[in-house]
Length: 291
Image (tube, rainbow, N blue to C red):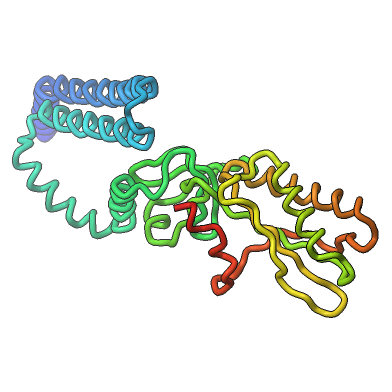
């Protein structure tokens, strides 16, 4: 008798499972299909939009990755809602639950949300653009992409640099390529017996012959210091942010050759690029004409 009861229970359970499978399995399969297709379509549309925007000249390069990511996330959210509706879940009530859960998740992911907020502010204020060389938080590199969560940079030696937006937004930043001109200051140590005026004239002649040196403001030179057996001449020139490296190398090499040709009294003991301190009045030489 007990065996008959057990068999009846098993048969009843099998019928229930079969009825559930007949009712819900098509919905589950349809929901999975919607998710798979939705994620594939989202990725495809994001790539297609980036390629399309890449050929549009009047769209800011900073906005292109952001627009692609925003479209992708919007399609993913819509896909999830459609997939849940396939299972018979009321999305209206679900949104209220998701909103409450979203608040808890937002508190737990404050760092991630701060990256999004920082990314929006970077896009709004634009302290740098794609292709600018920046220094921030002890790191430096050329900006290759600005995203919702992070910025991608390439260091001067070709390394990949990943920086969260909040780390950039909350730290003082230097943009080496934003302004049109860059000041280059070179100090030249000479023997005290050198003819000062002749040395100054030689430095100016070298600077004016170097390609990339601006004629306005014109190159300037002055006696920075005089102590015992040595004098220090400072040469200040203006160039572009993209030419400053090659201009520095050309000036240092040109000064060495030109002074060596004048004789032993002009042989430099040191030629070095310097950055004047904040309280040095030479910082203001020629700077007014750059504004």
